[in-house]
Length: 366
Image 1 (spheres, one colour):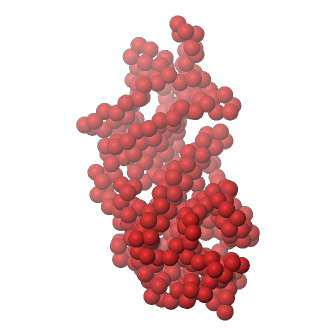
Image 2 (spheres, helix red, strand yellow):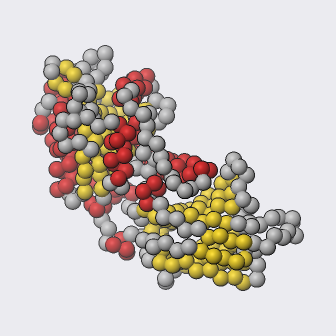
Image 3 (tube, rainbow, N blue to C red):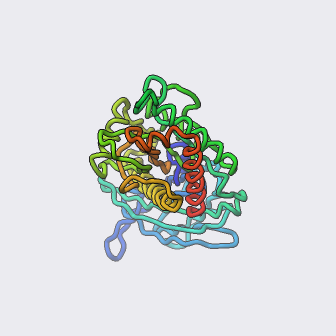
């Protein structure tokens, strides 16, 4: 996934072009800006122009290179930045074609591109590269970073029944999961380590500072229907999938505003595109995790809520660049679930299964 906000490294090419019309009266780009972003095992290039772009893109191996041919480009100047995967950027010109060559430190295993016409009438060519990170730093799935968020805390107890508070159950579960994941050599951070309150936007802010590969928020639910029981998982949706999901999201979000995004010097239209692309990727990854979660828990005979994968607009799931899920371990309002939730044995079993889900998820991503 693209950790866009934190890992932005900007390279700007100012390209002045002699204006002319082709045989078809087609105007080529007079000015081109290229933004380069790196994170994890991904590189994203944005070619931004006020005019249509005519380009040819391909990959060369041994050594690994990305080549972009652009029609009728002159007078290339560039500002270099130190980048993790890009060794150097070269430019040359042959007749009407200018060639940009990105020399890469590792092989490219996937290339995709999108052509977008912005609302202001300008044009963006988005090029996504997935790098073979194994050749770069001997990465394994267990070199991933995970942030675990124990819901509620301090003056916010969450759901309460018989003096049993949700905030205590979630903290116990978060600590158990952390230990299990650390034994598997994952890097794990907790948003809170004891009984204190953190605003929802600060939980997201803390997570983003750690540049995690996954964010998991742990909760225990409550509802007026005492017969409702079972574990469930939520991924982000601006529109909740049902009334139960909406009520839960409203309750969790009521005390906080969503954290803002600062994309610094980037043009707003470009920023909007970046956020939208990142949200799509993040949402798809979150859904993939949720589906693995449901499948694994079914096979482990864990009681699941009817339709266990649901969607709602939880504030803690709104980081645009981190796959994020919210796990409801069960319902404090249900007698059987309450007995399980207060059992160390049950929490150990549930967190053990979740740790296996996390391993499967990262393996599938590779």
